[in-house]
Image 1 (cartoon, rainbow, N blue to C red):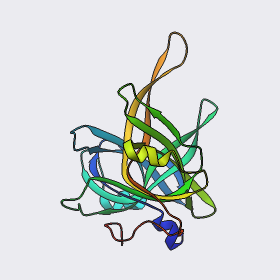
Image 2 (cartoon, rainbow, N blue to C red; image 1 turned 90 degrees about the vertical axis):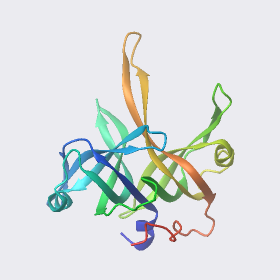
Image 3 (cartoon, rainbow, N blue to C red; image 1 turned 45 degrees about the horizontal axis):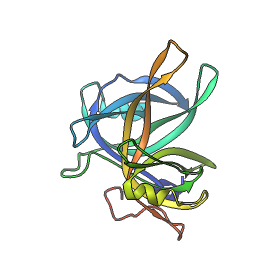
Length: 218
Protein backbone atom coordinates (compact mmCIF):
# COMPACT_ATOMS: atom_id res chain seq x y z
CA UNK A 1 0.00 0.00 0.00
CA UNK A 2 1.47 3.37 -0.98
CA UNK A 3 1.68 6.49 1.17
CA UNK A 4 -1.42 8.17 -0.27
CA UNK A 5 -3.56 5.05 0.16
CA UNK A 6 -2.42 4.79 3.78
CA UNK A 7 -3.52 8.39 4.39
CA UNK A 8 -6.85 8.21 2.54
CA UNK A 9 -8.46 6.36 5.41
CA UNK A 10 -7.40 6.87 9.04
CA UNK A 11 -9.17 5.86 12.24
CA UNK A 12 -8.39 6.39 15.91
CA UNK A 13 -10.74 4.96 18.54
CA UNK A 14 -10.60 4.27 22.26
CA UNK A 15 -13.03 1.95 23.99
CA UNK A 16 -13.79 -1.36 25.67
CA UNK A 17 -13.51 -4.78 24.03
CA UNK A 18 -16.92 -6.41 24.53
CA UNK A 19 -16.73 -9.66 22.52
CA UNK A 20 -14.36 -12.59 22.27
CA UNK A 21 -12.15 -13.02 19.21
CA UNK A 22 -13.89 -14.98 16.45
CA UNK A 23 -11.92 -16.30 13.49
CA UNK A 24 -12.65 -14.40 10.27
CA UNK A 25 -10.19 -15.36 7.52
CA UNK A 26 -6.57 -16.07 6.66
CA UNK A 27 -4.20 -14.19 4.34
CA UNK A 28 -0.79 -15.64 3.42
CA UNK A 29 -0.88 -17.85 6.49
CA UNK A 30 -1.83 -15.09 8.94
CA UNK A 31 -5.16 -15.40 10.71
CA UNK A 32 -7.53 -12.48 11.28
CA UNK A 33 -10.20 -12.27 13.95
CA UNK A 34 -13.35 -10.24 14.56
CA UNK A 35 -14.15 -8.50 17.84
CA UNK A 36 -16.40 -5.62 18.92
CA UNK A 37 -15.34 -2.40 20.62
CA UNK A 38 -17.71 -0.22 22.66
CA UNK A 39 -17.03 3.49 22.37
CA UNK A 40 -18.76 6.05 24.58
CA UNK A 41 -20.17 9.22 23.06
CA UNK A 42 -20.20 12.60 24.83
CA UNK A 43 -23.96 12.06 25.25
CA UNK A 44 -23.15 8.91 27.32
CA UNK A 45 -24.67 6.71 24.61
CA UNK A 46 -22.37 4.09 23.08
CA UNK A 47 -21.40 2.88 19.64
CA UNK A 48 -20.62 -0.81 19.15
CA UNK A 49 -18.21 -1.11 16.23
CA UNK A 50 -16.79 -4.33 14.71
CA UNK A 51 -13.02 -4.56 14.44
CA UNK A 52 -10.79 -6.98 12.52
CA UNK A 53 -7.42 -7.72 14.05
CA UNK A 54 -4.51 -10.00 13.15
CA UNK A 55 -3.48 -12.95 15.28
CA UNK A 56 -0.05 -11.33 15.65
CA UNK A 57 -1.49 -8.24 17.37
CA UNK A 58 -3.85 -10.39 19.43
CA UNK A 59 -0.94 -12.51 20.59
CA UNK A 60 1.28 -9.52 21.39
CA UNK A 61 -1.41 -7.54 23.21
CA UNK A 62 -3.38 -10.42 24.74
CA UNK A 63 -6.67 -8.59 24.17
CA UNK A 64 -9.71 -9.92 26.02
CA UNK A 65 -13.23 -8.88 26.91
CA UNK A 66 -13.21 -5.94 29.31
CA UNK A 67 -9.89 -4.47 28.17
CA UNK A 68 -9.80 -0.73 27.45
CA UNK A 69 -7.78 -0.14 24.29
CA UNK A 70 -6.80 2.61 21.87
CA UNK A 71 -6.18 1.61 18.29
CA UNK A 72 -5.38 3.02 14.88
CA UNK A 73 -6.45 1.55 11.59
CA UNK A 74 -8.74 1.96 8.61
CA UNK A 75 -12.51 1.65 8.16
CA UNK A 76 -12.99 -0.98 5.48
CA UNK A 77 -15.86 -2.55 3.59
CA UNK A 78 -16.33 -5.99 2.09
CA UNK A 79 -19.15 -8.00 0.57
CA UNK A 80 -20.65 -10.57 2.92
CA UNK A 81 -22.98 -13.32 1.75
CA UNK A 82 -26.11 -13.54 3.89
CA UNK A 83 -28.96 -15.86 2.85
CA UNK A 84 -27.61 -15.96 -0.68
CA UNK A 85 -27.48 -12.18 -0.97
CA UNK A 86 -24.42 -9.93 -1.01
CA UNK A 87 -24.42 -7.31 1.74
CA UNK A 88 -21.95 -4.49 2.39
CA UNK A 89 -20.22 -5.15 5.72
CA UNK A 90 -18.00 -2.65 7.55
CA UNK A 91 -15.20 -3.06 10.08
CA UNK A 92 -12.24 -1.23 11.55
CA UNK A 93 -9.12 -2.97 10.24
CA UNK A 94 -6.66 -2.63 13.13
CA UNK A 95 -3.10 -1.68 12.19
CA UNK A 96 -1.72 -1.05 15.68
CA UNK A 97 -2.59 -0.75 19.34
CA UNK A 98 -1.41 2.59 20.70
CA UNK A 99 -1.36 4.47 24.03
CA UNK A 100 -4.54 6.40 24.76
CA UNK A 101 -4.29 10.01 23.60
CA UNK A 102 -5.39 12.18 26.50
CA UNK A 103 -7.82 15.06 25.93
CA UNK A 104 -8.57 13.80 22.43
CA UNK A 105 -11.86 12.46 20.99
CA UNK A 106 -12.34 8.73 21.47
CA UNK A 107 -13.72 8.20 17.96
CA UNK A 108 -12.21 9.98 14.94
CA UNK A 109 -12.08 9.06 11.26
CA UNK A 110 -10.63 10.98 8.31
CA UNK A 111 -11.34 9.98 4.71
CA UNK A 112 -10.39 11.19 1.25
CA UNK A 113 -12.52 9.64 -1.46
CA UNK A 114 -15.01 10.05 -4.27
CA UNK A 115 -18.76 10.51 -4.27
CA UNK A 116 -19.93 7.30 -5.97
CA UNK A 117 -23.73 7.62 -5.72
CA UNK A 118 -26.12 10.53 -5.94
CA UNK A 119 -26.46 11.99 -2.41
CA UNK A 120 -29.90 11.52 -0.85
CA UNK A 121 -31.19 14.66 0.87
CA UNK A 122 -34.22 14.70 3.14
CA UNK A 123 -35.69 16.43 6.17
CA UNK A 124 -37.03 14.86 9.36
CA UNK A 125 -40.56 15.48 10.73
CA UNK A 126 -38.85 18.07 13.00
CA UNK A 127 -37.40 19.78 9.90
CA UNK A 128 -33.83 18.65 10.53
CA UNK A 129 -31.81 18.38 7.32
CA UNK A 130 -30.01 15.09 6.56
CA UNK A 131 -28.03 13.89 3.56
CA UNK A 132 -26.82 10.31 2.98
CA UNK A 133 -23.78 9.82 0.76
CA UNK A 134 -21.58 6.88 -0.24
CA UNK A 135 -17.81 7.52 -0.46
CA UNK A 136 -15.41 5.29 -2.43
CA UNK A 137 -11.94 5.29 -0.86
CA UNK A 138 -9.03 3.83 -2.83
CA UNK A 139 -7.06 0.95 -1.35
CA UNK A 140 -4.11 -1.13 -2.54
CA UNK A 141 -4.37 -3.72 -5.33
CA UNK A 142 -7.02 -1.72 -7.22
CA UNK A 143 -9.56 -2.19 -4.43
CA UNK A 144 -11.85 0.39 -2.90
CA UNK A 145 -13.77 0.70 0.34
CA UNK A 146 -17.35 1.96 0.08
CA UNK A 147 -18.20 3.94 3.19
CA UNK A 148 -21.75 5.17 3.95
CA UNK A 149 -21.79 8.63 5.51
CA UNK A 150 -24.45 10.94 6.88
CA UNK A 151 -24.33 14.75 7.04
CA UNK A 152 -26.53 17.10 9.05
CA UNK A 153 -27.64 20.71 8.80
CA UNK A 154 -25.45 22.94 6.67
CA UNK A 155 -23.16 19.98 5.91
CA UNK A 156 -26.21 18.22 4.47
CA UNK A 157 -26.99 21.23 2.28
CA UNK A 158 -23.39 21.27 1.08
CA UNK A 159 -23.23 17.53 0.37
CA UNK A 160 -26.45 17.43 -1.65
CA UNK A 161 -24.88 19.74 -4.25
CA UNK A 162 -21.74 17.62 -4.82
CA UNK A 163 -21.63 15.71 -8.09
CA UNK A 164 -20.92 12.00 -8.45
CA UNK A 165 -17.21 11.53 -9.16
CA UNK A 166 -16.00 14.57 -7.21
CA UNK A 167 -13.34 14.04 -4.55
CA UNK A 168 -13.94 15.11 -0.96
CA UNK A 169 -12.08 15.07 2.33
CA UNK A 170 -14.03 14.63 5.52
CA UNK A 171 -13.73 14.11 9.24
CA UNK A 172 -16.26 12.55 11.58
CA UNK A 173 -16.92 9.59 13.82
CA UNK A 174 -17.99 6.01 13.21
CA UNK A 175 -21.42 5.34 14.63
CA UNK A 176 -23.67 2.33 15.02
CA UNK A 177 -27.41 2.71 14.61
CA UNK A 178 -30.14 0.20 15.38
CA UNK A 179 -33.16 -0.02 13.13
CA UNK A 180 -35.99 -2.42 12.31
CA UNK A 181 -36.50 -4.05 8.91
CA UNK A 182 -39.89 -5.47 8.00
CA UNK A 183 -39.47 -8.97 6.58
CA UNK A 184 -43.17 -9.69 5.99
CA UNK A 185 -46.54 -8.78 7.46
CA UNK A 186 -45.74 -10.62 10.69
CA UNK A 187 -41.97 -10.38 11.08
CA UNK A 188 -39.75 -7.44 11.98
CA UNK A 189 -35.99 -7.97 12.25
CA UNK A 190 -33.65 -5.81 14.35
CA UNK A 191 -30.62 -4.62 12.38
CA UNK A 192 -27.50 -2.52 13.02
CA UNK A 193 -26.13 -0.06 10.49
CA UNK A 194 -22.64 1.47 10.60
CA UNK A 195 -21.88 4.85 9.06
CA UNK A 196 -19.76 7.96 9.36
CA UNK A 197 -21.40 10.94 11.03
CA UNK A 198 -19.72 13.84 9.23
CA UNK A 199 -18.47 16.81 11.26
CA UNK A 200 -16.36 18.48 8.52
CA UNK A 201 -16.34 18.02 4.75
CA UNK A 202 -14.79 19.85 1.81
CA UNK A 203 -14.07 19.37 -1.87
CA UNK A 204 -10.53 18.21 -2.62
CA UNK A 205 -9.76 19.59 -6.05
CA UNK A 206 -5.97 19.23 -5.66
CA UNK A 207 -6.32 15.42 -5.40
CA UNK A 208 -4.23 15.20 -2.21
CA UNK A 209 -4.74 12.95 0.79
CA UNK A 210 -6.34 14.05 4.06
CA UNK A 211 -4.68 16.71 6.17
CA UNK A 212 -1.53 15.39 7.80
CA UNK A 213 -1.42 17.91 10.63
CA UNK A 214 -3.16 15.68 13.13
CA UNK A 215 -2.80 12.74 15.47
CA UNK A 216 -2.71 10.16 12.69
CA UNK A 217 0.78 11.02 11.50
CA UNK A 218 3.10 8.14 12.37
